Amino acid sequence: MPAKSPVKSRSKTVSRRSAQGKADPSPHSVVSEDLRWAMIAEAAYFHAERRNFALGGEVEDWLAAEAEVDALLKSGGGTRQ
Image (spheres, helix red, strand yellow):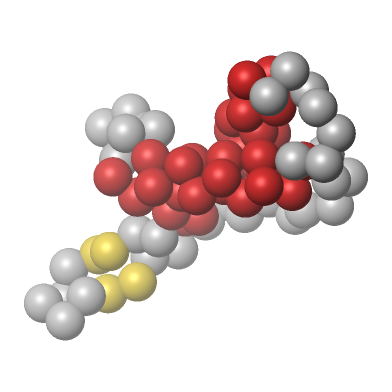
């Protein structure tokens, strides 16, 4: 698993504006970068577990987990509303 790089947490939520002028939050602005990283790390762990922790698939596990978490956050499934 890749080493965690230092990440500065954001105190403000950043949003993009859609063509209609409504806020369109990106997956990264819904939760802090630290929480997003933790969610990805946990999901990557479960991917590795399904592979019985065989060496050689760590990057693929991480990338798949990142895509899953970002999709979940984009859909609003990982936030309380």
